[in-house]
Each structure stands twice: as C-alpha cells, then as structure tokens.
Image (cartoon, rainbow, N blue to C red; front, side, top):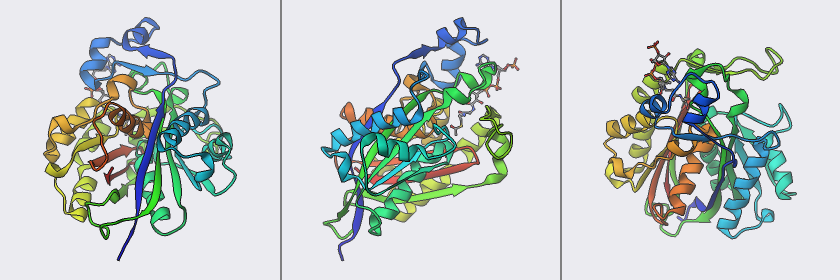
Amino acid sequence: MAQERSVVVGCGAYLPETIVTNTQLAERGVETSDEWIIQRTGIRQRHIAQAHETTSVLGTRAAQAALADAGLSPADIDLVICATSTPDHTFPSTATQIQAALGIEGGFAFDLQAVCAGFVYAVATADRYLRTGGAKRALVIGAETFSRILDWEDRTTCVLFGDGAGAIVLEARESPDQGTRADRGVLASCLRSDGRHRAKLYVDGGPGSTGTTGKLRMEGREVFRFAVGSVTDVIEEVFRATGTTAEDLSWFVPHQANRRIIEASADKLGIAREKVVLTVDRHGNTSAASIPLALNAARRDGRIREGDLVMIEAIGGGFTWGAALIRW
Ligand code: ACO
C-alpha cells in the first residue's frame, strides 16, 4: 500500500551580517584567546544579530530562502513550526510572527522548545502531521538569537554561541516504492528527554519564576560527557528502525556545538569523518538553528544531493535529544 512520506523539497538559511571573531572577543575584554577556543571547540567566529534582528526576523529570512529553493510561495504552506529558545516575546509565538511576515493567512503555526534539539523535534513533529493528513506542506525552522541570553562576563559560555536561522520545507507525498527506505523523505526519528539534568544547562530566568529573561548557565564538562556518552542511543534506534548502518549514510549532520563532541560521536558510531558535515567553525553553536544551517551549507556546496541518506542528531538543555534519518 502506498504511504505518505514527508519529503524535503527546499532548504535555506540566514546569518546576521555582523561577524565577531575569537580575536575580536578577546579584544573586547573576554579573557580568552583564538587558540583556546579553536582547540577546545573548533569555533573561529560567530554571527551576532543587531537589535532589530529578532529571532522572527532571522527565521523569516531563512524561510524565504527555503521557499525560493523549493519554488513555492507562502500560500503553499499550511504548517509553520519554529524551533527556538529565544522567542521575540513570551507570546505570541515566533512561528506566528514568521507566518504573518511571510503573508501566510491559512493553516497553523507554533513554536517548539527543545533547546538545541529543537530542530530534530520539529522535523519529527512536522513529519507526524504530514503523514497523517494534518497538513500538506510544512516550513520547519530553527531560529535563535542566543547572544541575547549570554552572560558576556562568563567566558566559559559566551565564546560558544552565536545567532542564525535555517529552514526546510517538508511536503507530504505518496511514496512510489511502498514506503521502503529507498523512497525519499523522513524515514524514521527517535526523540528522548530526561529532565533530571536541568542544572547542567539552563537559563536562570523566565516569565513564571523571576519575571526576567535570564542568562544561560552551563556545566560544560558535564554536558560534554553526556553528549558523547549517551546520545548515540537515538541514532542506534533510528538505524535499527530502518535496517540501516553507519556505512549506508551519505552524510551525518549533527548539532553544531563543538567539533570535539561531533567527532567523538561519529567515531563511536563508526561514521567515517569525511561523511561528517561541520560548520561550527563559521557560526558557533546556534542552538536549534545549527542543523538547518549545516544542511543548507552542504546542500549549497553540492555535497547533499537528492537521494542521499542524511542523519541529523542533536542534544539540548533538559536534557533533550533526538535523531532523524532522511532520504533527501
Ligand atoms: N578562554 C580561555 N580559558 C577558558 C575559557 C575561555 N573561553 N573558558 C574556560 N577557560 C579555562 C577554565 O577557566 C579552566 O582554567 P583553569 O584550569 O585555570 O581552571 C580551563 O580553561 C579549562 O576549563 P574546562 O572547563 O575544564 O575546559 P574544558 O576542556 O572542559 O572545555 C568546554 C570547556 C569547551 C566548554 C567543554 O567543556 C565543552 O565543550 N563542553 C560542552 C559544552 C557545549 O558544547 N555546550 C554547548 C551547549 S550544549 C548544546 O548545544 C546542547
């Protein structure tokens, strides 16, 4: 029997114009060095949004690029999901503001909050709506302005993050090959969370507690240990569910937090280093935006092609984590 599949029909991204290099951070008074940041994280620079560049502004730009790539117009979209932890406002959702900025008058839009794992969660969620007839075409966006929630006095966190947005368009299509793994689309996804890890990565404010936005706090070593030690379970589950192995992958596009975490995870899973898409050097950790930014970079430079098997994976505050396998 023919099955519905959520097929990627376009992708796009947007980075704010202002670039701040590691050396510039040190010159501006952060007690750090280019050498330290590159050696520990692989990050060389980050993009920082200007005051008028809110998360919805970045997200709208990325969404427009994804729509243009897909050859679609805003009216073709009936679902907008924006993965973000840095919304313009407590409410309404950033997704509804992007919907309005694009001129979409139908369908529905909502934010999804799973911190750095937000894009994987959003892909898995959109996939459920598309495959069960709840929507026909979805804009799945990851957009963040983490520079707004950084403590610029804390060198252990402020050097790691940046601003940006990325988006894909997913379209419900009947799969010609009875829904085998040869067909295009999201083949499987696996999501996990464990709220007991809250204290390792969190923001110390919020509307219901302090009444302030708060700043990001992190126990870097603990996050590192968990990211490398535990999150491969979701990838292994997706391999099992689809009968695939690391060898079958065309590309591994993980959350871009830290080069050492990415390479250690790939090694543990037996994924060849040349299949790993790395963009963290160019934009730092952009949380939910990092995977679509990396997908877009690899699509634009010709690495990801139609038919390729692409694994996305991320871990975020909570902890939350997840993976999805996509036949591009
Ligand atoms: N510049 C220079 N020195 C620094 C800096 C900095 N920016 N930050 C910390 N140091 C110093 C520390 O003070 C310490 O000095 P000391 O030995 O005199 O006390 C020394 O460097 C080592 O500090 P550690 O914290 O032990 O450094 P570590 O090797 O663990 O690296 C890092 C820190 C990069 C944060 C690492 O723990 C890491 O990558 N953790 C993962 C965190 C991460 O990627 N989070 C992303 C968010 S999570 C997510 O996206 C889901």
